[in-house]
Amino acid sequence: MATDSLALPLADEQLAQDLIREMTQVEDDLRAAVANADSLVDDASRHLVSAGGKRLRPLLTLLVSQLGTGVSDDVRKAAVVVELTHLASLYHDDVMDSAPLRRGAPSAHEVWGNNVAILTGDLLFARASALTSELGPEAVGIQARTFERLCMGQLQETLGPRDGADPVAHYIQVLADKTASLLATSALFGAKLAGAAPEHERVVTQYGELVGVAFQLADDVIDLTSSGDVTGKTQGTDLREGVPTMPVLLLRQIVASPEGTPQDGELLAEIDSDLSSDEALASVVEKLRVHRVVDMTRQKSQDVARQAIAELDGLPDGSVKDALVKFAEVLVDRVA
Image (cartoon, rainbow, N blue to C red):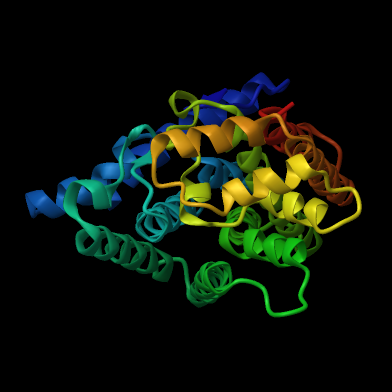
């Protein structure tokens, strides 16, 4: 099966067909959830939904529900909640990162300005909260704690590591909060709302956390090695805005170590220079993409994905476990 650019080939044809059918319904429900009577607000709130996306989070919710009683109205609702939450965070992220493109389309702040983009993100967070309230107080608590982690991750990224802290470890924690927390919640919702065993809830939550970190590390590689036509984002935006990524953090480590070469130091100086011109940015991207830090980041992504798969030893053998293994593999195979 496929959701936009993510292909998840499954050996169990019936499971694949069931997920395709349910994802189609979730997509319809998602579009209904962002609709507004006001035409301007409607355009802004539909902007990223209409641009597409991998829909990783709702897919994971639906898939994990198969460990229990399967997809229900509540599971579908939770699938919409996690995608709405993700979309809302993207409106805010793009403003903070000054990202001109998202999913191949102009970012909302490029079309309507920062204020409208931020308020549209807030509106989608509110819609997600309203839907979550229909799932009961436990779900509200899970969603609130997830939202807290999303905010903490963004804050920690903005503030940077404390003096003396390991920048790489700090970055991994940022990824865990900003990205992995919502994937963990996606898996937890699927298990809990389908009545899966408590020990299976713990397994899939930890799996989702690790998969989220592996996914974002893979994105750090893809942002340098793939064109904007593939990623739907402007290449090198993080470099221009000074947003830390794993390849740059590893380069800083190398430059500070005896292994660093004059060429490494020159590249880092170029990264830290004014990258406002497209030519300067393209030059840095081209040099960084062939540097060994990209392979090092790729390896880290694959290592974390293997840790996620190892967590699945706590699940019964079968098509759902096999599909979760494939889910993790597909996320990192994008950078193989």
